[in-house]
Image 1: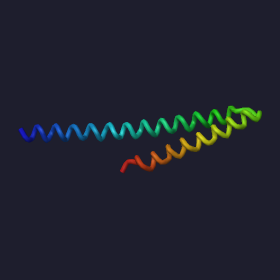
Image 2: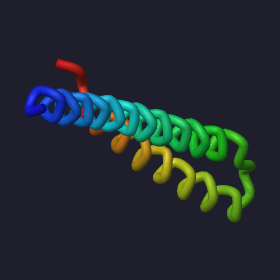
Image 3: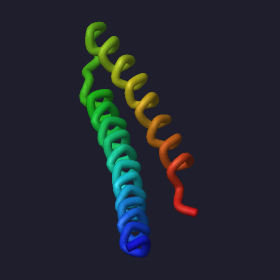
Image 4: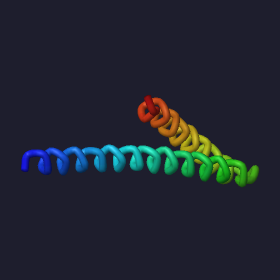
Length: 79
């Protein structure tokens, strides 16, 4: 009886580890998507003064999401 309980507990934690790894990958992919999204917004901005402000905002957002992505790669790297 103890063996079955131990096996169930082991299986539970193996599943939990798999879910956490998947969530780490989803997080990295999300930050990568947002960084690319804002890079494209920055590149598609025109030269008018309003567009220049939008381009600056898009550049800043791209940098923020790029740093978050890089931090995730460092924090979640496989050992």
